[in-house]
Image 1 (spheres, helix red, strand yellow):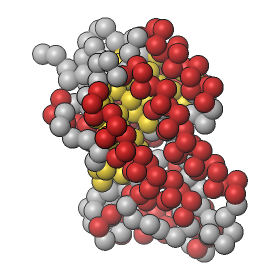
Image 2 (image 1 turned 90 degrees about the vertical axis):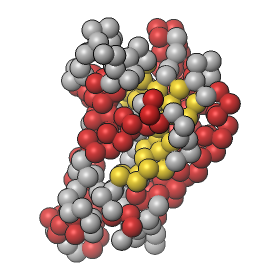
Image 3 (image 1 turned 180 degrees about the vertical axis):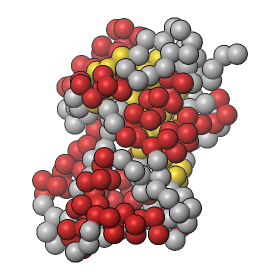
Length: 261
């Protein structure tokens, strides 16, 4: 029995750890050849080495990529074009966060979040489009629950993730004539190394222990637990499968209900 994405080429940013790693594994399990990118080649390779090859014909590869550099993006995408000729699935997952009150927020923090979370997504999408237009394909962007539910201490991060949803919807309209669907996912409180840092930052700003912050996250999630990277990967796997062929411009919440309370 063939796999849903057998013979396809998937390109994913920010796949060295956490959500990106789980999504890369999902793509490989679905039969795609996965090009794993991250800021450092070492972390990208760590993920690539974990990927399955159920069809026996997949040739997963790791590449270093700084999504904030237009030159680096084009360098990597030119390599992909030369070696693979196409991209069937584009997963824009690279993202960063920081926490601060608006009163004390610096321009450097603001720019850091926007440069990675949305400008980097624009660079990669623009560079990948010529490789996708002829055959069509799927683009999925990682937004956040912060894109649908604002929170204090995250004004800059929230603004960047609202921008991801807006970019997704505009791209969905523009790319539809090429049979390219564009959707995004909005994870809630995801148990990752990024969250491990965030509970420390939030605890300092609010006078709480990291453990108390994490417990509050669970308390605010109706399904009663943290979101895991695999929860996000399962939804992304659906969005790039044949079953989601008529979905585009959607922001899918994966938050255990935390986005509605």
